[in-house]
Image (cartoon, rainbow, N blue to C red; front, side, top):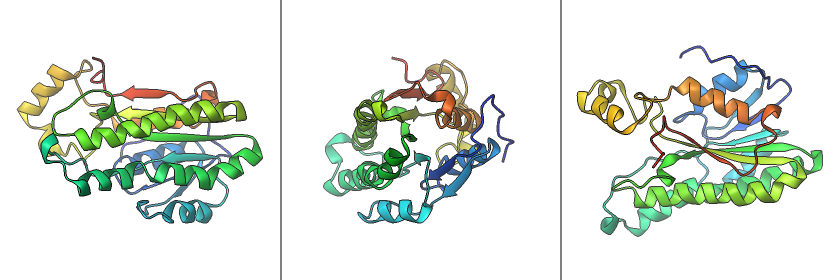
Amino acid sequence: MAIPLQAPFSLAGKRVLLTQAGEFMGPALAAQLRALGAEVVCSERPLAEPQAAQEVVQAAGEVHVLVMHLAYPAPSTRVEDVQEDEWRDLFAHLVDPMPRLARAVLPQMLQRGHGKILVMGSAAALRGQKRTSAYSAARGAQLAWVQSAGLELAPRNIQVNAIAQNLVDNPTYFPPEVQANPKFQERLQREVPLGRLVSAQEDAAFAAYLCSDAADCFVGQVFPLSGGWAIR
C-alpha cells in the first residue's frame, strides 16, 4: 500500500468507527486516519440486517467520528429490467443502515456536544449513467439524507457531510488490466478533465480532513471527488 499523504491537521485523540472497512476504500481510509493519529475501530460486518448497526456501534464503544462506508456492487441493468430484488438489495445495503447507525451513535455525540459523520457516497448520484438506475437511486438517497441530517444536527455541533466519488484508483472497480486497456485510457481523457483517476491517497486524505476539527465549518455538504467527471 502507498504511504498515506501527510496533512497540516491532526486526528490525535479522535476515535473513528469505520464501517465495512475491508471493502472498497476501507483499507486506504483506515491507513490514512491512523497516519494522522486517530484510533480507528474497523468493522467489516455488512449492515443490511436491521440489528447490525446497533451492534456494531455498541461494540465500538466511544465514537467521535463515524465514517459510513457502505459498499455494495453496482449492477449493470437496463432500467426496464430492474427487478424488485435488485432494488431492495441496493437500498438494504446502502440506505437502510444510515438511520440505524445514526440512532445508535448520535446519543453519545449529543451528550458530549460534538461529533462528526462522514458518508462515503458516489458521484453516480450526481450524473446520469446508463444501466445504473437502481444503484444511482440508492446513492442519491444517501446524499439527500446527508443534506437533511447535516442541516438538523449542525446547531448541536455535529457535522454531517459526504464525499461523492467516482473514478478513484481502486482495484475493486478499476483493476490493473482495466486501467491498461487503451479504451479505458481514452475514456479517461474524454470524460475526466483531470485526465487520470483520483488516487486512493487523495481520496482518503480529503476524507480525513472532513473528519478533523479543521472542517467544523462544513455541514450537510456533498463534495464531488471524481477528477471533474461529475461536472455537467
